[in-house]
Length: 332
Image (cartoon, one colour):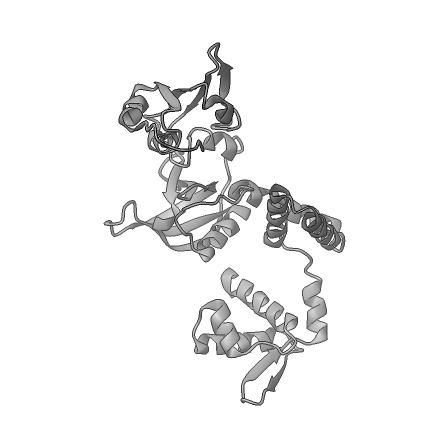
């Protein structure tokens, strides 16, 4: 049985245990996005794997599968999985951000109680894996427009990062290309308006590449693992860009000067993890950092209207020179 099918079988068992009435073929088809024939094969696998499965038929002749108590106890013995701990941790962090004190405390108690039921070695491993995923995925939920990423695509990448395992995929550099097969060593994810997988193409060189998630197709986790570069830091790598796009040709010092009117608002922003702010005598604020991604910088600077001036680099100054509006009613 493949890794993906085993995960689906466990998920089906949990559904059959959690629902008092059980699960029907319709429930399975809707949950897993499969045909009725595939749903039937899954119920046969459920019956073969768990000896306590019972079935019953309702008044409309719909058949349901229910997990027996012995099998439910076996499922409970699994403890907390790393992806489930990630979901709890991200919910806690969102609650902290939103000031939902009561909900945060309740979620922490649930997390701690579940971890306490697990063997210590298992709990430590789960926490370690969860931390790696949280580092890769980021802690915050970014509002606003973004390109949708398929849930199964993200879960596949998360599974590969936990290994770490190689990823095979078809990648289309642009919408017009047919795409080519890639065998990639995954290193993490960059989140922004568009999401990028950071990785190395195995066998080519040691250069890190960025793959847009919306151009990845036919992705799957391979059984082969690889050795990650122990010196790699996703945080350091991400700091080479202002947003999620990186370019070695554009990587240089960036200097912005915010007007005395815009300076109080600009002081509240973290434009870059390594930024340096200088208070000027006239009340303006100068911000310096080193990064690439001029287009994403220009998109951001547009929101400030005429409240900011680009001092460097020259290329970026030219991109925004004709777009510094004076009629915006508010600052970002």
